[in-house]
Structure formats: structure tokens, C-alpha cells
Length: 140
Image (cartoon, rainbow, N blue to C red):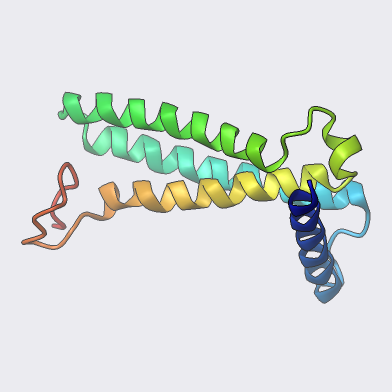
């Protein structure tokens, strides 16, 4: 429990430092929550856009698309389980305070940005001669 509270405190300090450095930034807890969750929603939108582009680019590769869909479902399950492992208490706001939404959206955003970067490889391609690319196409 001490470790998770320490993590939350660290996230809170980082959020406060970030908002102090930006005069027009959120000033209330509600504003912090809204800003963090909006950033997560934007990251999720980016992820979905990249995913849809991959589906279009690889539309002729049915085995890959089936595997990609399975991987994405598994990633969503991982994302949700990871968030639960960071904040395992049932009564989230009681256990982690009013900063919980800000922190949870921050965790979700970080994971989503990482996943988007992973998926981007299928759009960017790999250099000619990359022997371990698997289903990722060679750059044009």
C-alpha cells in the first residue's frame, strides 16, 4: 500500500509542477481530471486512427489482420489489468484521493501512446533487408 501511495504522491507532485509552470493550466482538481482525461482520449483517438490505417493498408492479408485483432484485444485487456494493478483498491477515490482520475487517465494515456508507437511500425515499414520484420512491410 505504501508503494502505491508513494506512486500517487509522485504523480501528484509531477502534475502540480506541470500546472505551476503553465499559468493557463488547470487550477482545480476537476480541471486537472478533465485535462488528463482529455489527453488520454486524444491518445486513444490517435491509436484508433493508426489501427484503422493498418486495417486498410493490410486489407489483403487476412491472417495478419486476424492476429492483429487478437493482439489488440489482448492489449486492451492488459491495459485495463495494468491500471487495476496500479490502483487495486475497490473504492478508488477513498483509497487514492480526488487525484485518482487524473492519475488513472495519465496511466492510460502513457500505455496508449506506447501502443500507438508499436502499431505505427506497420505503417512506417522497415528498411529493405530487415530479416526479422515478420508481417511489417518494407518501406517503399
